[in-house]
Image 1 (cartoon, rainbow, N blue to C red):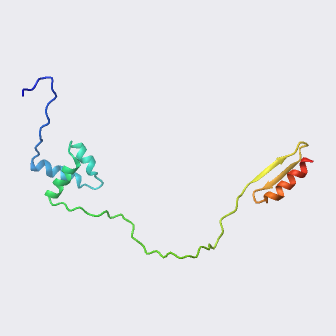
Image 2 (cartoon, rainbow, N blue to C red):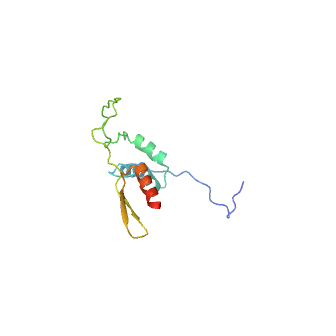
Image 3 (cartoon, helix red, strand yellow):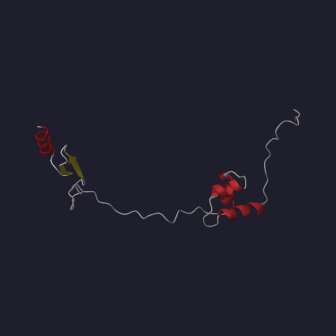
Length: 121
């Protein structure tokens, strides 16, 4: 089968010298280096870079900044020493004559309903 000049070039396997591989592997070992970014920069598949790292004897290490695992005990006691704060804020009711009634957030709904009904009369 002949190739037409208009056809895109066929993919050829790239060959890397041992020195090039070592330089790229060393770059991937620098502090803060991202293996994916190094591979992308050199037009490599990330898996290929991992293979080269193994070939050069690079042993994967566990991340050092993991938090330690601490023992935990679960109990059925659900009491708390301090209660959560109640709702805060207030509402201001302005009557037609200009009188104002301040109602705090902790007012009982039934009591407020009785006051509003009494004011409607």
